[in-house]
Image (tube, rainbow, N blue to C red; front, top):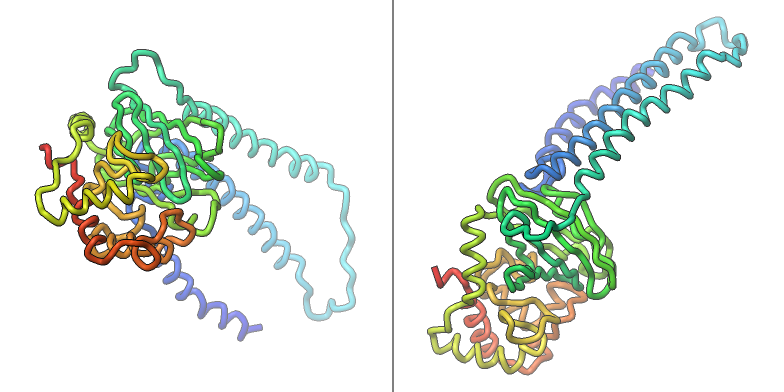
Length: 348
């Protein structure tokens, strides 16, 4: 018995190291326990309240369990003694019934009230700049964001103004996905043929990671997006820049790339209002954080993506343009040069 306790005691330092290591895991802007807006704070408060109740229950039950183990343990000389059998304590039975009901009431009332308070995604008439409406469409495996009040469409990066209510009208173009920005709000399923709404607000400028929270296919785990919160004045400037669009490509390779892109890519992609929206709208591609939502944003990676996208993102619908396609390495390089000219910041 003594050796067993010694072995258990040796595990304590390992457990302490593991706890301190695990609490450091996670990326900034990707934790429900580090809320960056009022909706996320309300939801984090409910989680902490639930944890507190569970901890109290575990401590009390653990104490009673330990007390019973020690108080009524078998002692030397009592190996053959059968203890007195006790049953039918009315007071304890009432307590075991009433206490859980009280705990559920303590948990249920604030949960219901706060759930309704963070679910009000109605858009008032003549809302002006106080509310930003975004239509979110999930695709396998990318995200499309339409701003109906501004006539803007983008993909992968969702721009929002800080301190403003952002109403998200979420749907899916294919299978069921789930829109989730852990640091700003809870999840909302994106269902084909159905639009559901939620809202979020960001306290301060920053980049907050978004994820698909519903298993939707081979690259579900790579269906990332970014929420980029900027000041209201910067957001207004961004909408104007997006409407104006990027400058014309200046270099010869980018100009060749533009021609190739219009010929080979605009059957699916769009740049602003030109082209099809069955693939990501690339109007501000050069200003985005990642390629395909998760890859490094550089020319080398973009060329690899164009050559063989499914090798990087299994199940992606974009056809290969290099290995099995009809583009040479030089043509792919020219297209990449063109895409990196698609920056609306050129108009600043």
